[in-house]
Length: 440
Length: 144
Image (cartoon, rainbow over all chains, first blue to last red; front, side, top):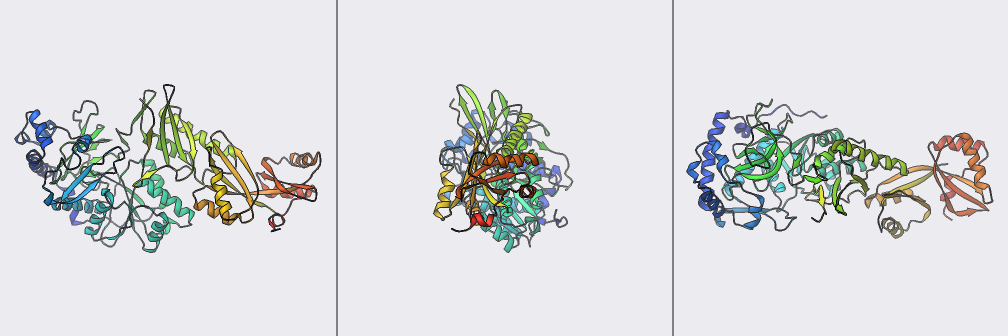
C-alpha cells in the first residue's frame, strides 16, 4: 500500500469539527429558514403543511423536523420539470437532470449560492480523504446532466488541485492519461474502476507503480469486500463518497482517512433514519431509510426527502475528530431489494457471495423472471481471464462454486450463468444490478 | 514441439459462434483446425491458426476472453487401429488426455491429431521414447 501524506488540515474542513451544540444551533437556524422558504415558494409543500395543520413557526427545535411532511421521488416526477423550484428562473444558474431510466427524468436547480454550498462540501470531501493543492485529480465521473462530473470538478478546482476533466469512458485513454499526467487521485464509480484495473492488467500497466493513491468512489452502492479487492489490486486507498442529485449531487457525505463510513456534512444536510414501513424516526445506530433535509438549498429546498438508501447513523466519535455523524456504507437501497420466493434479497448479498469465490470480479446482474407462476433468479456473471480455461470442467467448477456461495449466503438456489465480458449494461458508469422481467 | 491453441468463451445463444468467425475471416486468418466443447450454458471454441498471437489480440480487442494453451500434435496412421495404438502408449504412461481433436489436413496417409495433456512436456518426451511421431509445430504452421 502506498503511503498517504500525513493528515493535512485544510481550513475549509473547520465546520467538520464544530462542537455538537453549535452545530445543532446552526442546523436549527438554517432549518427554520429553509422551511419558511419552501412554505412561501413551493405550492406542493405549502399544501401538505396546511393539510397537516402546520406552519413554519411550528419548527421550534430540531426534533420538530419529524412533524414535517416527507418529500418523495415521485413528487419530483409529478411536478416535472420545474414544479418544486423556490427561486425565479432569473436566479437559477444551473440545471441538472437524472437519466430517467424509468420514464421522465427528474430536474434539479441551483442558484449561485447553491453552487457555492456544493463547491464547499466537495472541497471538504476531497480534503477529508487527504487531497490538497498539488494533487492531480482525474475526474472520470460523467460531465453533463449527471451531477457527478461537474460537482467533483468545481470542488477539486476550488481546493487548488489540478483537475483532469476526462469524464467517463474511453478506458485506454483514461489509463494513458493516468500514467502520463501522473494522476494522484481518481473519481469514478467503483464498478468502472474495477474495469480500469482489468484493462490496465491487459495492457501490462501496473497501477501499483503509478503515483495514484486515492480513489473517490460513489454514485452506486458497493460493498466492503469490493473495497478490499480494489485496494489490493491497485494499491490506492478507496474512499466512499455519498450523494444524490435531489439533495445536491456528490458531496452529501464523505469518508475521512479512517475509512469508517461517510461523515454527513450535517451543517448543510440534516439526516434522519426512519423505519421503512411506519415512517417513524429511529435512534442513532438503528438501520432504516435515510431521510435528508437540505438546510441551505435556495433553488430547490428538499424537506425530509426519502432517499431509499438503507443505512444507520453513527454518533460515535470518529478517530479523525470530526463531530459530523457518519452513515454506514450504503450497500443497498430499498428500491433494489427484491423478494424472491418470499425471501428479501439485496444485490449486495450476491456481490459478497461472488467475491468469495477466487478469481471472479463483481461484474454481475440479477435477472428475475417468472415461469409458470414461479419466481426464477438468474445471476449473470461476466467471465474473466482468471477463471477461464480451455476445459469445460474448470469453468463449470467456478459456476458451481458461485452458485454454492450464493446459496450459503441467501439460502436460495439461483441459476448462475457466465456471460461475455462487457455485456452487462452500464449507464453513466453505473451498473444496473437488478432486471425484473416478472409480469405481475 | 508444442502447438499453441486459442480457446474462446462463447455464450450459448444464436450468433455466438459466427461473431468470432466473421472477425477472423475479415482479417484473413485461416483456421487450421478447430473444435467446440459445449456445456449446458456456454461453449468453448478451440482454434489452431498460424498467426495465433495476432488473432488473439484481435479477438481480445473485440471483447472476447482468450486463453492460450499448449497442445501436442501427433501423427497417426490412417488405418483401423491407428489411434488405438497411440492411446495404448498414452494409457501406459498414465497420461491424462483432457481432450483431443483432428487436423483437417492429411500428410501421406497419416492423420494428425492434437492432444491436450495436463503436462505437455513430459507427454512429448514419453511419446517420443515410444516411437510416436510428434509433429513439430513449425511443420504444421508452414505456409503451403
